[in-house]
Amino acid sequence: MYQNYNDISYAESPFGTLSQYMTKTFGWMFAGLLVTFAVGIGTVTSGLVWLFASTGLIFLTAIAELVMVFVLSARITHIQPGTATGLFFGYAVLNGVNLSTIFLVYDVGSLVLAFLVGAVYFGVMAVYGATTRRDLTGWGPKLFAGLIAMLVCSLVGSLFSLFGVRFGLMDLVLCAIGLLIFMGLTAYDTQMLKHHYAYFGGDAAMLHKASIIGALNLYLDFINIFLYILRMVGRRND
Image 1 (spheres, rainbow, N blue to C red):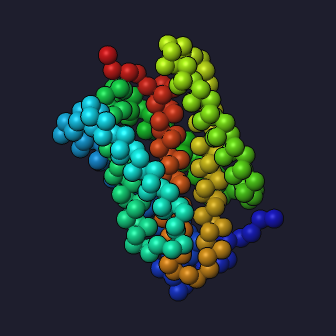
Image 2 (image 1 turned 180 degrees about the vertical axis):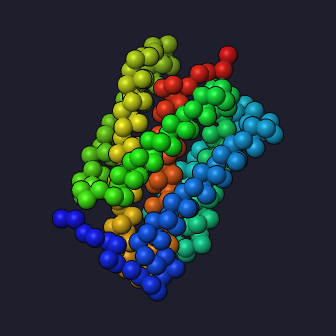
Image 3 (image 1 turned 135 degrees about the horizontal axis):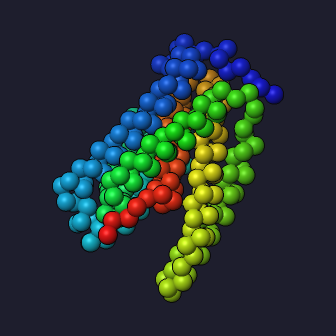
C-alpha cells in the first residue's frame, strides 16, 4: 500500500519535511562525488597516480575503503553523526585516489561521455524512485542477489583471464547486467529515503546518520553506473 510520506514533518529535526530531508541527502551525495572527482583529478595532475599504481598502495587504499564502509554500515547506530559524516567524506577521498587510475586506462573523452550518460541514467531512476507510487521494497533482495551472482561470474572470469582465457562478449553482458542492477538500486535506494525518514521519527541524530547512509548508497549507485558505462563504451589509451 502506498503511503504519502509528504504528510509527515519532523519540525524538531534539522531536516524538517521529507523534501528537505531528501534534498539534504542528495546534497551529501553530490558533495561526495565532487570530492571524489576533485581528488581523482588532483592525483592525476600531481603525478601521484603513478606512485599509487606502481607501488601497490592502491590496494591499501582499497582495503581502507572497505573498512570505512563496514564501520559506517555496521556501527551506524553507535557512532556520532559527525563521525558518520567524516567517514563518508573520508571514503570519497580514498575512492578518488583509487578512481584516478582510470585516467591511465581511458581517454578523457570517454570519461566525460560515461559521466554524462551515467548522470542521465541515474537521474531518471532517482526521479522514478522518488515519485512512483509502487512499493519498491521487494526489489532489494532480488537486486542484491543479482549483484552477488554477477560478482561471482566476474570473479570466475577474472580467474580465467589469469590463464589467458578472455570472454569479450561475456564481459559486455556482465557490464550490461551490472548497469541494470545499479539503475534498479538507484530507484530502490531513493525510495528507501522515505522509509528511513518515517522510521526514525523525530530523532535528529538518527535522521542525520540515515541521511549519510542514504547518500553513501546513492553515491555507490552513481559510481558503479559510471564505471559500467565506461567499460562498455570507453576508448582505452594506447
